[in-house]
Image (tube, rainbow over all chains, first blue to last red; front, side, top):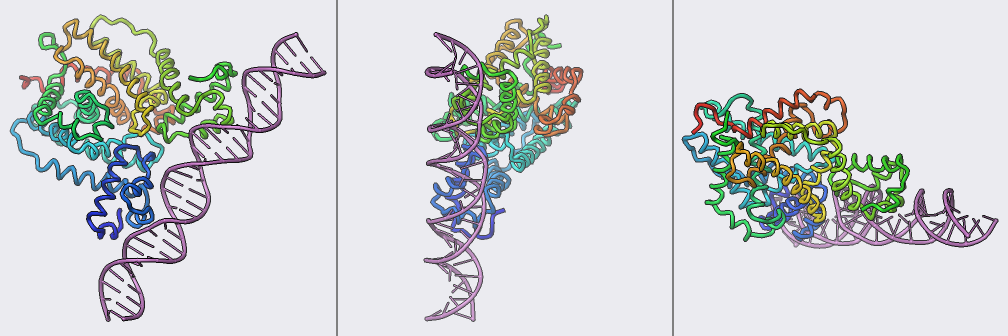
Length: 222
Length: 222
DNA sequence: TGCAAATGCGACCGCGCGGTCATATGACCG
DNA sequence: CGGTCATATGACCGCGCGGTCGCATTTGCA
């Protein structure tokens, strides 16, 4: 947890630090990321940073578990209540994609915790984040099971499958769509403008169709 | 590329080095992994290692693009020719799972390259590996499209979806199944015995069903 | 205005890393 | 036996890191 001093900081200074930290941690894994760099780029002496956070992990943890989720919640806003379960799922996916496209660094921040690492605390953080995401998705899917739209055979496995699809899977598809590397997208505002809301809707639709009907050809399904 | 000296090494010494390298690179990201550690654990002076490989990246690249694929090919063996496309896909998935379970370190080695990193060469390596995997899977799926078993609307996106499912997705499911963390599985032979061939078949079947039919409830499908 | 508490600050520390190099060793050969 | 060449070895280098510490500066209050 940051110290009170941190929260008492002039907003401009605090923002500078936080933004540089987000940039650093979105481009590099926890281990690779350098507190010295963050401080240097934010023009804040390293000694001061250690007055705001206990250590590197403290800053990382706060970003990952407090600040990023807060900003995401702010962006996503209240979910519009759709009638149909599949429409609801589609919206859920589209909102996730919108966040990825509009705030790629924040999205990457969480994904970067997936890196295989020997730092056990980071692994713990990642697991917690994953579990939270899974729980959220599971709740969505449970509604579908309740309304009879979704097969109910194994909700846990289904949740994991869907989660993988709309997480790493969609990221992959989007990058291919943009024809760019992740690091280029992070650096460029221009690239991501090419995945506008209309295109995102289409991709979300395609994803939902896959989840609902699979890839088996119509005529031949057993 | 390793030097000729490396290939002329007494087998026992070479194996020691390679094995320790696999362990190190499967537990840590490229940046986190330490050549000094590998050398120390293999009881080979660091100076000697630099007689076998140009640098850390050279060793990593060789492991990732030569040695691991070679061992995987050896393990998987020739694909038994099934008649039905879906049976073929199921076998493809089951073999992949078997490799993951029997050689978790080798499997992790490749996955570890997915780590977000600022080291551009590592990103290049990862992209090459992914593309190779995607091409292989695409070929499998293309057969399904040709035989009329698979929807042919967008083979590229489909390939990416399926790839994500049987890659990170199945890994997740398996870890949940084993009730263990990745690092525990790497360390323990015991754990992975619990995912025997019969259980793997079942999981592969479940995955194929999902890919073929999706999650939509039977009665309500449009 | 003066003092104490909070904060800013940057030089400094120890560490482990990737990588180098001068020298030692020993196999092979005329 | 002497000389050559491939190989083995570990002390050593420079670097950037995470983190510390003591002093300078500012702030808030009586």
